[in-house]
Image (cartoon, rainbow, N blue to C red; front, side, top):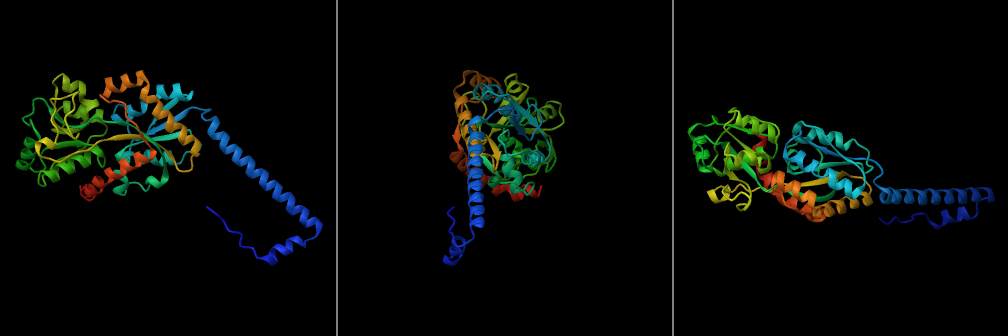
Length: 344
């Protein structure tokens, strides 16, 4: 920003004609001011070049064991290798991430606090559960993408496809128990499918995190749920849980027998990207260093193995600009169903 000096000529003349003592004081103040400005700039630069000197915290708005928690904890070792400081995950569940955001945004803007972010935060902002939006954050990068979110039933269920699910819901409106993370990603996917299927109804139950929803499904407490593939993978491969549809645009060669929702006639396509954000006001140099670190770890063989073995994820990276474009595109789908979500 360019600031224009609005003082007139007479004002400047008064300074020139001021007594010697006053003029000397003005000069001293100006020199002191310049010195302080120089020191501040130097300090800001040092904050960027010396960072990190302390452990780094990553805030997650969910309990341990789910996809959000995994995609934060998978960063701990590779980031420590790159940055030279421990990385700790802070889990704060509640309000579909809104409780975590409140705590995260209260932290100092010194580069030692980051938050894991995916579309849950866009959903709760669209629904009015939080006032924080992208203007409150500094994006580093999208560093991971889920291979798919899966509509899951017990393998003994009579429901074998998305069409079966729609027909069962039509035959028993509000009767099927569907576990979701209320107000979050899985909830909006259910609304999307119900809309695609002609306005069917479910008994939507708050199931919590991915692991919690899986336990409820296996225990027979709910009829259907939506889980990231990484959460349900072992139970799917053992035949205990069936995937009747998933939200990727195409079948995944890692689990080729699981059909997409789209190929069954229901346009339910969601790709879940995971990113790290800092609070607005965090020094630019620090945000840039974290951005570069997230890019660097994509070539870490140990990290690649961890994300593949646990969640069938492959290395993925989008810089800050492209990441914001990604989220802006997804927000169009969120806004389409946000009003329906508020009414449920």
